[in-house]
Length: 536
Image (cartoon, rainbow, N blue to C red; front, side, top):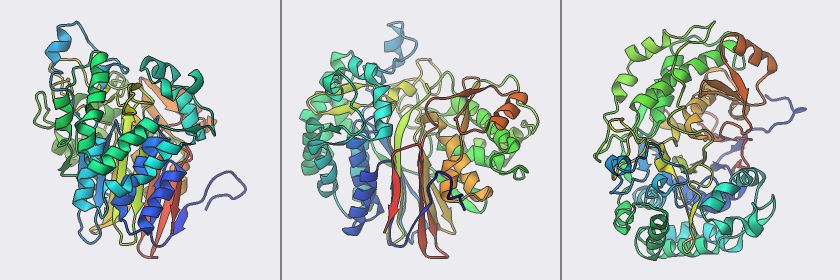
């Protein structure tokens, strides 16, 4: 139990339903849907649509999503890949002929066809009780009438002014500047686009005036996109077979590649073969082991993780080998409890830039259906490119591609890039135990495994497991939050790590524990965001 004389928050308890999101209004929207007879998936879609309006730096309808859904009584976890594809004309030869060796994060070439809207519709048709016509109404109201800018949103917004100017997103800079905390920000053009989707479904996004506006905007900036690419995006979302690993008596589920959920399972598999650290969750042995494990699995990510689909340039991702006990044991054997490894390639330094933004939310309804849902533009405001007539801010997920012929993650037409966003689901004896997720771009696998170990291995309560300080190896350095104790920093330095403070915290997260023994739900929401968990 936490010390009530110190700052912090308690876990949230409820009995009928619960939602945890990174914006209070989105959490309330989810509860409204649950109380109106919707299930966990309905509530998640309505909530994330609201976040696409009021947390615009992190997510939007111009982005992508992934989902894990565990319907009560089925013993199954359904995984949906809602990530978009590159333009059909985006072959590596086109870039080579122009002497291009890397993509720019604000370029039209970094924009893939957004997958979120098609994914929402696909999910609802398969498992929802309500449709987009009803579930988008709260988001439409927030877009039309506006909503106060929250503190974390404002901070991220202020850091993105140059990108928004470059992308021509003048409506996101009222008076030429980012809005302040408490300023009301409305998006009437986006409201009209959401109305069209509510009336006509996802087709209104991928075909017709909205799609034409997005394509024209991209082509004016040199993009290769066509209206046919967007029309094909209507059928892009697909259910896929989830991957899993048994850890501490629970089955941990993730979406398969092209997402990086594989890394969560690899990290847990390596760490699970070690005894618990003798110095507890905040000690040097635990922190060092986690850092070294992250360095190893992110090295493998950079070598293997890509789109395993049927598009040109698709990769054969060796999931089975990377999760095999023999391979995980071989990686575990490389880790010493006394000194950092030397000569290991830096984790992700040449693949993805730091500091991504995303929204993660989870919902559990009164029937026990559990939804783990993540939606993202990738970086703050994605590419920064705004399609003005439709009000759609376009993602920059294509920035995850490489312009390197022969690399598994090399760009190709109709190919998905390596993706960072990953929802998680914990199952026990065929029943959902906890939907969970940690935002933060490439940090997410390290963050999920850190959170799960805090909770299941080291005995912190669900909120303390979110609150605990975070650290992450990146670019040859060890990025540490300000909450990391000074003595731990000194000890990590002595072991050969190179700590450096980071200005922005590592991600943010949400989780809902389904306590079947006591008949209640227990929620947590990360203080690194503006959100909250709430139940009824």
